[in-house]
Amino acid sequence: MENRAVLAVLAEVAVAYRERTRRRPGQPGSGEATRLDLFDERYARPSINPQEDYDFLELVIAAEYTIGRVLKLRVRSVSPRSFFGRGQVAQLREALLGLGSGLMVTNAALSPVHQRNLEQALDARIATRADLIFSIFERNASSSEGRLQVELARLNYELPRLTGVGKELSRTGGDLGTRGGGGEPITVLTKDRIRRRIRKLEGAMDKLKRVRELRRKQRLRTRVFTVSLIGYTNSGKSLLINALTGSSEEVAQRYFTTLDPAARSLYLGEGINAVACDTVGFLDDLPAELAAAFSATMEEVGESDLLLHVVDAARENVEFRIESGTRILADYGLAGIPRIVVFNKVDLLDDLGQLNALQEAYPESVAVSAATGEGLPELLRLLAERAKVQVGF
Ligand SMILES: Nc1nc2c(ncn2[C@@H]2O[C@H](COP(=O)(O)OP(=O)(O)OP(=O)(O)O)[C@@H](O)[C@H]2O)c(=O)[nH]1
Ligand SMILES: [Mg+2]
Figure (spheres, rainbow, N blue to C red):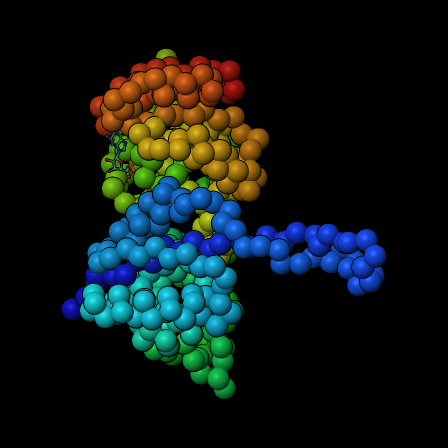
């Protein structure tokens, strides 16, 4: 059994900013006004952002690794060869040896070249944030469509990263799938074979899409009020849908538990039937290939009458999360759908002052606990009201 204790490396890159060189009077004209000079290297932020660090470490845990040690490194200037400076690479090597671990996970924005060179220099595997996310998705995809989506996204992500030597691949170890620690190892595939596989997967996805469209048309014909629950992963969407509908979606204290959107019937009282859809959770900076993979599902969300934007009210930076959720919605073209913010997990709050402030900032909101049921009657009433107004019951 491989040692799953990993070295987690949090990198903060000093942002070098450039300033226009001041042109001294009488200086030869070489100092064009447009010439930019590296003026100084300064840190854009006073310290490593604890929220980002926390999110990253949670991803590491969600990918089912044990964190053996956390190292924070400041990178003054990104080395083109291995991202980190020479002394830092030595430090990393020592830390890995000390742990007896062959895997380093890092939030550093490594280029494929950095990653390869570092793996060689450290004689260890390196998983980036994207690798971790892929690995979590691979682990959690349960339906055939979810698995297809994730495999397709992974292959599209890996393809440009592979350097072909002849037709064989030269990535360390010659495999892809073991990189993030999850999924099936894809041993020495040629680029051609990967491209063929991608085409095959795309064909299968097309078929599934047609089936989905048919179902969707049937739903539209029946004109049922449709509510989709969206929001960050782990905010409690599935538990809330269970609490509202009495169904049993999988609920877990981990990221991306739900990958396959499921529709459940939801009775709103007063003879009003609705449909509630669970969706895949958000996360900032999802690898573009994964975001694309889920855009089809998000399109379906686009046909909802109402979005319930579920937010974990017990976490820090609630407002920041709402806003970045809003941005993600806009990216998927869903900004135009009516939305209610649901502050969930209020049972975990000691101080209700912050919640009150949030509710003032977001008047279209309701505070609930999917765990205790608090606030759910109010949410249902609100939904019934909207159903009457929007669909006209
Ligand atoms: N205390 C408390 N815990 C909650 C509440 N709602 C959800 N949880 C917990 O939060 C965790 C995540 O809940 P899920 O319902 O799986 O979250 P999700 O939004 O569906 O997550 P993904 O499917 O990964 O996007 C679980 O451990 C739940 O038990 C709540 O109101 N109060
Ligand atoms: Mg879920």
